[in-house]
Structures are given as structure tokens and as C-alpha cells.
Image 1 (tube, rainbow, N blue to C red):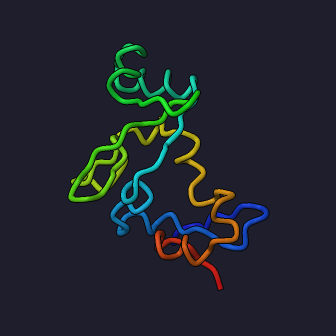
Image 2: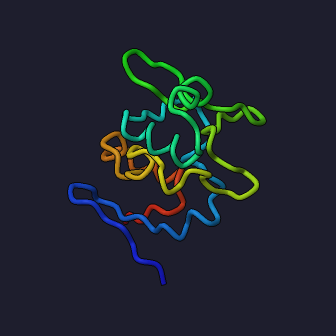
Length: 126
């Protein structure tokens, strides 16, 4: 049986086993930003065995003063460039950015639980 994840200040729990049957809703859908820090850029580039400069040019886009992972358009959906639909998972999982590691416990969803439940089948809330 899976352990449910909780976070102080959030009124819901998360069942990570739901990811196996989800289809990557948190990695696909509407266009958005997946912000990465300098440290995360270095870690992902190392995992991919790429020079950081090449990684920045080929996998990131500049958003103001920050960097975001690029997206790829697939059948009207905007997928994270590292989401692998055939494997239903993240190809950089061990080096995924903090933004990805903290989903679904984002401040945005703290009071938008119905919206979160529509996106994520792993949300447990009464």
C-alpha cells in the first residue's frame, strides 16, 4: 500500500501511486513555466551528459530574468520537454526541478482544491 504524502498548511494529501495511471497531467496540458535554478540547470545538464551552455541553448527558454524548461507541442498539449509519453514519466526524474518535486503542494493550489483534483487523480480531500 502506498504512503500518502502531506504538507503542513495544506488540507489535502497526495497518493503518489496515482502517477502510474495518470498520464502525466502535471507535465502536460496548458502552456506554462517550469522554472529552474542555476544549480538545477547544472544537475540536469550533468545527468544528460551535456555542457551547460548547450543545455541552456537546447532545452531552456528565458522568461524575464529566469529560465524555464522548454515545452513540446503534442496533439494540442504542451508537454514538458522531458516528459516521455511512451513511458508515462519524466526522463530526468532524479534531477527534476524543485517545482516538479513539490507538486501538488504549491501555494497556487492551497485554496483551489477542486481545480487540483480535476488535474491530479492522486489528491485525497474530503
